[in-house]
Image 1 (cartoon, rainbow, N blue to C red):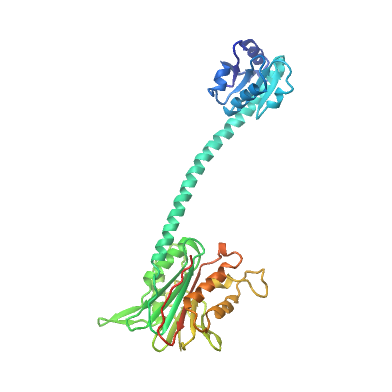
Image 2: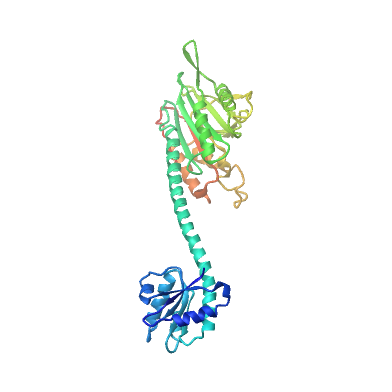
Length: 410
């Protein structure tokens, strides 16, 4: 039932309250009357009320303002009756509180309080919704904080699974750029020294982004087999065989939804520079020579699609001063098209940048050149919201032993 609170002191407004009740616009909704003191209102003891407040005789603007503020702070609304002229005092009206003279008729007051009581129902509902929203948002903020912490931990775990240092070998230097588009990456790389003295360089790019792709890269990293034992002797698997085994392993797993990946695997002999390379639907490796760029193609289907997929491999000799670049397909949208700078559609601008920074050069360390490539990526529009994961692995043939360095994105 509706309730009308009569706030007065010391004289009672009971008779006026009764008259207002009798004139209530809807008799079936006549409110119950409740009396309270001005001190109770100012002391914050009233909550969510529709009130008729009698200001003490001689009340000035400050007191009327206090009464109005107290009523609003209590989540209420109502009419404040004042003695004398109301011109300046009406300037204190705020948020559902009106100021009227004590001579206002019961009919008028009944109509005004009826309208404010209807408004009060809406205000109470809105405040209830706000409380629920605050509780919900507080819970959501906590969940978001936990999510951020978990994603930071996932990113740390993923990086811990990557090589901290690249194997050192006389004749080869290597550097890597690893830049996830989000917390975690759908790319993975590995560099391993093999039992026969060669070095294996591997990059895989899971289709998709975020956590699902990152989890798939962990499966790929654990499933990649580099050697096979025969008569107790570890024999190095050639790249095509390693990709074939990896594909069979992925196809044999029961994923709830299709999970695919591209990959490239190169095995390099540091002494001779001989390279054997195979790919699985991956961008062609770039061999940077003094005569220009050579695209090293190797045919093979995506990993995880066809259980009986066959993988071809290519072989060549990486001459002194040449660089072999393995990379993920995110570079195709990392730079604007020189012929259409406003477009970020896939293009080959990255090849020119890689050739300029990482091609045949004099004495610049490979890691420094890779850092310059990373800095160039930072200068591109939209680099703070990178469209795709980026991974690049550069292998440089040195005429003498060189220190092997690794450059990670911050």
